[in-house]
Length: 389
Ligand code: ATP
Ligand code: MG
Image 1: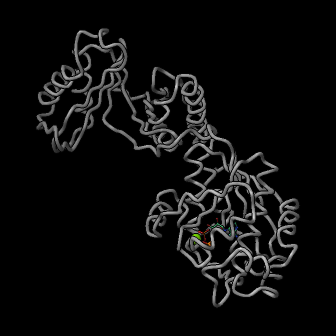
Image 2: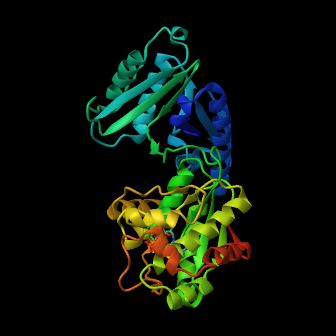
């Protein structure tokens, strides 16, 4: 049986008001289409009731489902056979799918009927029973409704039924582009790419800002940031832009002129530069990878002192994460490998970092023109474009 259609499911959009939902569904449809195209696969992608349906070649269905599942806003995707929505045809089709796909263990049939309940003279339980019996007859597998090794799914809508054996888990979230833009401060380390990804997953298009410490950072540090941007770009429907900002002069002055609060001042420099980029790109927030207490510069008190450098909201998706939770997610999204390279950039770290700085202390110790310098550096940034290919 040909599974040449991919059924794409989404979660949270479904609870929005109908106007918002329609707008978000259309954005999601387009994003799914782009994400399939990006993998060089051909399929037509359409909205149908509360699903998105992609039709292409059966050979590409797994790749299409994977691409759809990796599109923000999608909860899951399944390569399906499309058959008549009568219990008899569904039961035959599920049995045929079982002959193709079943190898061992128990199974269950999970059926759903969408739309007008009166439109069908049968219930989803009727479908499950009839299809279940057909599978038992076809392959002799035992039924286990509580903990099946394999699930055959059926979704009936009107006269049509979608029958499937595989379900690719999606990332969830909201479609990219359904929220206003943000700017994400990304170092290429473990935390910041995950933070950027999390904001993107909630629908915020992101412009990446990387601050280059020049000779204090080195080429390996820049290369790592670019590699991260390339990985993040895989998740966006279009391209991802990285603003490469020169922070060498700032670092030099902080190292020469400032003591234990210099890391906090460097964060303030970064935030102010990012705020300037936000103004240029119509972004409404700055995202960082900070987690409360992870480093001395990230104690809850110090975060207050760094935040005061800007008036734009600073979003910290990882604020309450433990490091091992961030590592796990970095592995999953593919940014861990490049992040774990130690680039040896530690120049700004003071030997006795301040953990409880007041804003006054930080301001008094830093060069008066530090934040102005940040704005100038942002204005002179070079912009790199990544397409995730
Ligand atoms: P990361 O947190 O980026 O994975 P890290 O732990 O070495 O790396 P931190 O000292 O935790 O860096 O930096 C705190 C936050 O400041 C980062 O999460 C990131 O948002 C931002 N940041 C740090 N360095 C840079 C940089 N060179 N360019 C852009 N943003 C940076
Ligand atoms: Mg960190």
